[in-house]
Length: 68
View 1 (cartoon, helix red, strand yellow):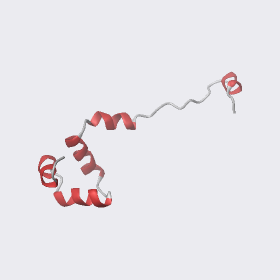
View 2 (spheres, rainbow, N blue to C red; view 1 turned 45 degrees about the vertical axis):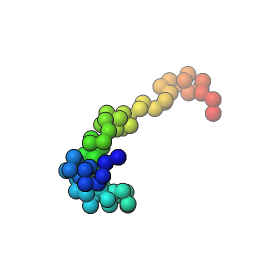
View 3 (cartoon, rainbow, N blue to C red; view 1 turned 180 degrees about the vertical axis):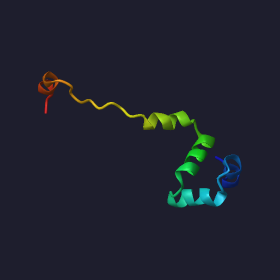
View 4 (cartoon, helix red, strand yellow; view 1 turned 45 degrees about the horizontal axis):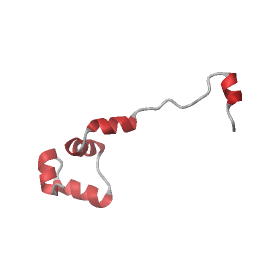
């Protein structure tokens, strides 16, 4: 709910860059992260990037128990 100019002032990301991001989706990763920091909690982004351990069987018995 900020204007481009207000967000540019708060974040340091130029208003034309914010406009380009809004219209084309193109932005550098650095500028995206700066905007995210200004608008939301960065820990939410961290949670999205956590590597989840896959459910891979570690024994023959686990392989045989799986239903395919």
